[in-house]
Amino acid sequence: MTWKGKTHIVRFWRQTRGAAAVEFAVISVIFLVLIAGVLDFGDAWYMRQAVTNASREGARYGITYQTNTSGDRIAPSALNPTIQNYVLQTSAQNGGKGGYGLQSIMTSGNNPQVPTPAGSGYATGTKGSTLEVTVTATKTWFMVANFVPGMDSQTTISAKTVMLCE
Image (tube, rainbow, N blue to C red):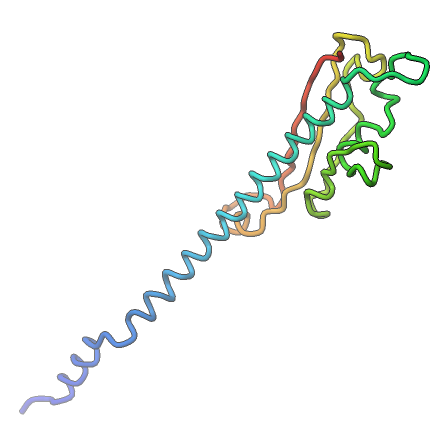
């Protein structure tokens, strides 16, 4: 006497109905995590480029030879708008006097900042003296920090440009 239930169990385990749906569910989760990571790294790359360009623009603005109405050279520390305002704000915010507009390029959560420039040329503007402009912003990792053990959820991205006054 044989047990007839065995054939039913074997036939049940060999069925492939729904296998594609299960495989899709597993693969789609991995694919979505991968896409989210690419977007997160793309945002970091964009921020790095924006911060680097802002630093360069601020330094270029500060070293360019500018004079007042008497023809005297204006030191970078006395420029209007200041180097910090020039980098962070747009031309419209600076009264039409130009601006890179880093705050409008990034989100408010990135908190872009421009500390007081350094270098001997900042106070004097003497030809050939150095002017250092540093720009920083905070990158918040949305996906990557969740999957990399020990990684902070925020990273500071910074760039420093050193140029000689003209």
